[in-house]
Image 1 (tube, helix red, strand yellow):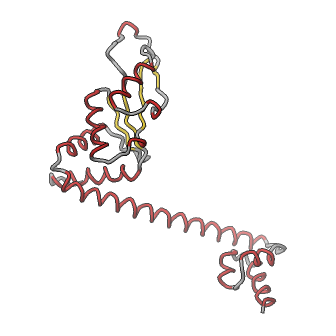
Image 2 (image 1 turned 90 degrees about the vertical axis):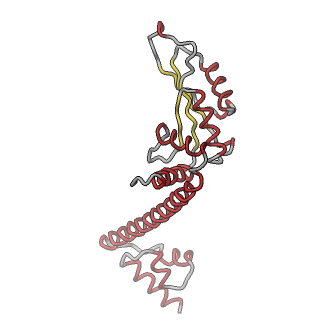
Image 3 (image 1 turned 180 degrees about the horizontal axis):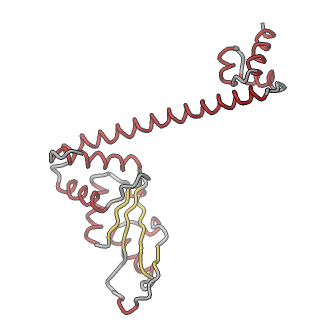
Length: 220
């Protein structure tokens, strides 16, 4: 019986049939099949057929992952859309969502990011992220942009106090070169970006925005 199965496996392989397909036809382990087929030499046409088979398998697997990802994304967005029907009555939810809609990152990279230079707005958005979005403290990252006229250490300490986020969670401060020394503003502390690398939250916020449009009867 095994001899017949081995012959069938070899014949199939010589035709360029993939190991996965052969395993569905011949009832043996993959290690046994590899041993049987290790000396099989494929013709040029068989190699092309095998290559096409692998490409189709990879394409099918990639499409399956894409469908699952899109399904998960749509599910989270729709859940956020439904949540907004209740949350819209909360002033903090509504204010934070509108501010994020105006100033937040909406890039396809799906990274949650809000940037501003107004300390009061940063305080409000930190409260929004903590109380409405439920972001845990360890998930926060802070990115600061300043001019070379200011001292990074002082500015980082300032924004750490405003955000109540440890400086250990700060990204490397971006320093923009400037020659306008006569315009130096000692009160200016650069821009502060609140960063949360959470795709699920990004999609949830997208759902909230759609829910807000529903609330005001605005077509998306």
